[in-house]
Image (cartoon, rainbow, N blue to C red; front, top):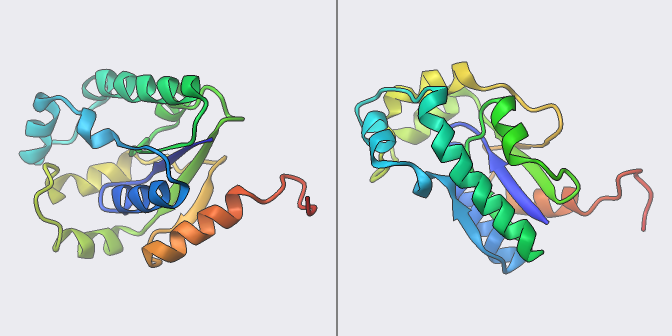
Length: 168
């Protein structure tokens, strides 16, 4: 199973993703590592990315998805995946990919970003992230304000519930 953790900047995708991958003893991939230097510099300046900026990045993330599915192993990917069209590109095999949405308010994220250091994305782009966000209809929705260990526990509980609600 591939776990795609999505949400706006500062929602905890990387922290939760790393903790989940450790719990599952599987690889973790952070989509932020796949951004071009151009994209990183643009975000450093507080300029939001547009769809054209994101296109090569999304295809790079998709290649990680394809690789992990091809290897038939568990993996965790942290990726903002803000728009439905992005998720459609990334989630081509819904039976093998669980989408996890770390839902947060703008106020919560703003307070977190005050303490965030050493990240290329300027807090100035936060508003644009919320403006671009199309909340998913087919995701496991998790409150990003919970402690990381509780988030991981909730993901594990929900990921292994039978679809029809019966006990296996």
